[in-house]
Length: 188
Image (cartoon, rainbow, N blue to C red; front, top):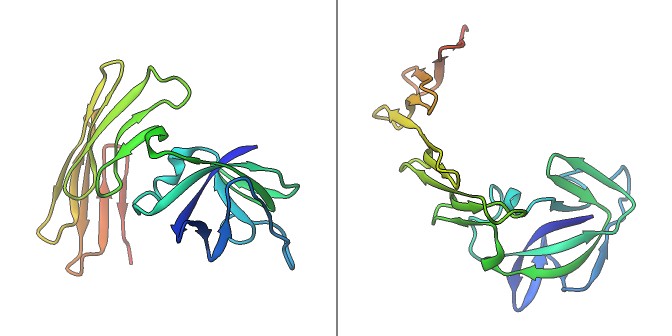
């Protein structure tokens, strides 16, 4: 099974959690007790390169490599997998990433990694909330956000015209959230 794993480069070596790796190398984890578990025991990787963005790509010094899962034990949680054995196939050049990010790690351009004819463009507000999306078919989506003087989001309107409202107590804790479908309130 093919996947993607992130590393740091230190003194020319690929490192992850203080373990050194090399392109072409095969690495195995043997649990002392229990079983392979995502985010706990084993070698972690993602099935899609774009899934790594939320966790890893905000750091400039990280390297992404294509790996092959050659293990016989694994646990899968959505697009993240933990396995007992991988082989590192190659380093992925940043020009090959199916997306580009701004300085905060937000995706600003993304292309379909299977069909290069599709793409999406995104824009964000100063808080990092997406305010604009446009796809290669010409569809555009807009979001509007408003904040109180403490920086808490108090209003959002999405492209479908649905409005959301938030209310906070004097300490800034959420006490009410409302949209046209539901009202959530803190009772006690």
